[in-house]
Amino acid sequence: MEKYNELKELLASIEADADKFFNKGSKAAGTRVRTGMQAVKALAQEIRNEVTALKNKDAE
Image 1 (cartoon, helix red, strand yellow):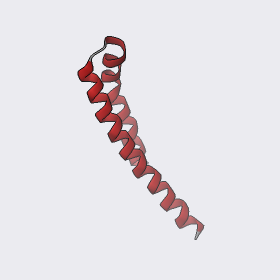
Image 2 (cartoon, helix red, strand yellow):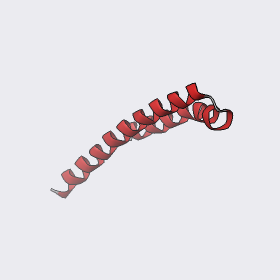
Image 3 (cartoon, one colour):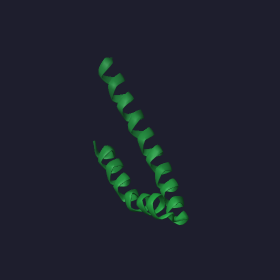
Image 4 (cartoon, one colour):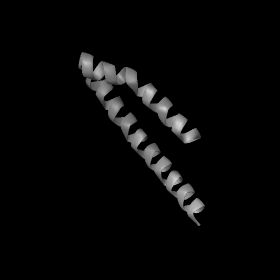
């Protein structure tokens, strides 16, 4: 659950830059959004792997 909370915090930290990019056209903010979304992708994959491992462990 710790990583899930970390994911929520990461998304919240990207929100301001997303607003700057989509509503104000800031290209630098767009770069920060892309970087942040890459981190979201990596963390989401870690969570998926953890969930799968726990699910398979319980199935044994």
